[in-house]
Amino acid sequence: MIVAIHQPQYLPWIGYFDKIDRSDVFVLLDNVQYKKNEFQNRNRIKTSQGWQWITVPVLYKYTEKINEVKINNTVDWQRKHLSALICNYSKAPFLKEHLGFFEETFSIHWECLVEINIHIIKYLNKALGINKEVLVASNLKLREEPTERLIDICKYVQADTYLSGESGANYMNVDAFTQAKIHVKFQDFHHPVYQQLYDKFEPLMSIVDLLFNHGTHSLEIIRNQNKR
Image (tube, rainbow, N blue to C red):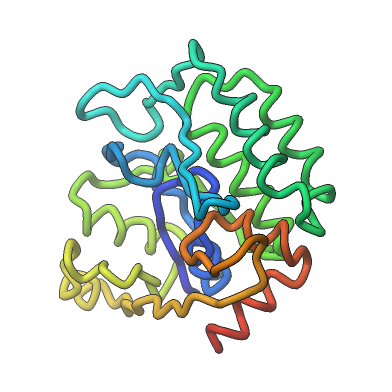
């Protein structure tokens, strides 16, 4: 049993979904400190000028956990995000298949950042054909120390393998996993090159860039570049 664990991000990039696809259970780590200027409230999409950020404005207070962060709804961000997707992907062959979901999503009044992130992640999993169990960490009883928290999650789902991000060794105690009889495996992600709109390939875009351009073939493209 392989478990992968990651903070809920906004419109996550391709490697995020490769990580989910490689696991049996994926846990959204929403009960850790929010990190400003990372990917919890923003991501990048392809444009005719290269790429641009689309960012959910938040009302963040220092030390708040991800699931405590509120959205700043005094800003008309939802209309801008939907417009950015439509404008920049109007010629993408699979935009129309997913446009209804995003129109509905951006019509909802979201109070908490984590709620829209989880909503979108679950939809994108289904759209890609990744049928893995998704749990939310704040629903579990866990210790606070970072490595102990991860081990507790592994034990809760009865995983014998923890799939970590490539930089996981920099912040966690691998020996503690060994003592808990949990094998740590590090994600080795190779970014696929695929047909995009506009000139010059831009890596590290939100998964929607791949999905809007390649539809149901998106997961196959990821897997072909990252042989199991």
